[in-house]
Image (cartoon, rainbow, N blue to C red; front, side, top):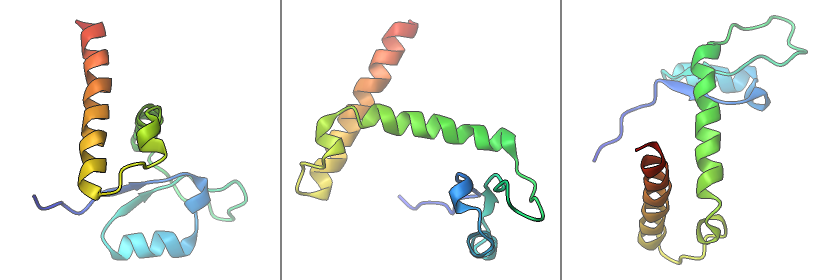
Length: 100
């Protein structure tokens, strides 16, 4: 399955550098990075889109609760991806059953 090029790059203030922003823009990706407080010219940030970064971070934290994923016990890429799918399904089922 081919992957599409991302439209946005969501990152925290640690990635607020002119070189990072320039390389993203040259690749056709819009950086959504809040400016550091010491930046001379504050660059506008789409904070509505930036809120999605929090959801992504929470998802990674839920997946890392599975020790096998956090420590990368699986030797092959296929078995790691399979267990990642199982963990995601278990998280989704728990949320789905609690909402129903």
